[in-house]
Image 1: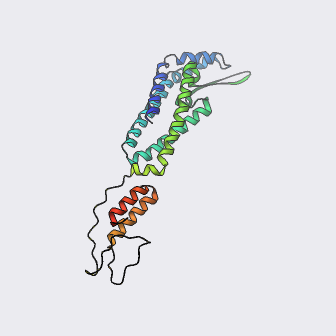
Image 2: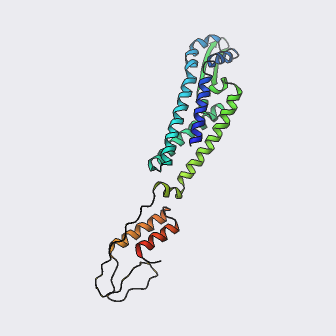
Image 3: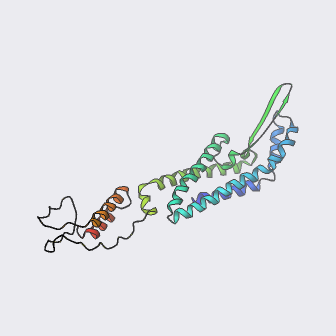
Length: 243
């Protein structure tokens, strides 16, 4: 996510660097279309501000992604949830730009349009923002945007894996088990609880409810993937005092 965010910032800088020449490129493209060239007078204010808006939105997306990356690195569970939401929105914008402008870069979702009417009918001019930039920018931004999409998809998959639960919900150190009280002082001590254990003899003591409750918590954590087999076995042995 950090690498993708840095790429977004680089893309925002490139868009802002070409913003001054963008209106002239739009004018040139408009003059080669069938739309009345005078339509540029109404189009110029939008063409002058559009690259800066695109650069700002791309930069904000980069900063948000950096913040989420820091939160995930720190193991915050809320950061994990926000990462899924933010990455989903980013991928939606990328797919929209890919479908409309042929490039998954954020700049591909921005465009200018104009129309005019004459005796032959209505003429329309539509141009996506990357089309008015040099080919070098179009190729580089499209290449990085494709890499960013794949990288973010990998992030979503990794965050959804059961093994990620142990990172965002680390197992807390178990407190020493409380002293076991028995119904009869003369009964032999029972230090483990297992289905394969032999049934206690008549009058044998039973483990207290606290041990059973802690063992059930360990079992549920193991089933959810929050504990590996080794961690579960070690915690169970610490709790019950047996293999």
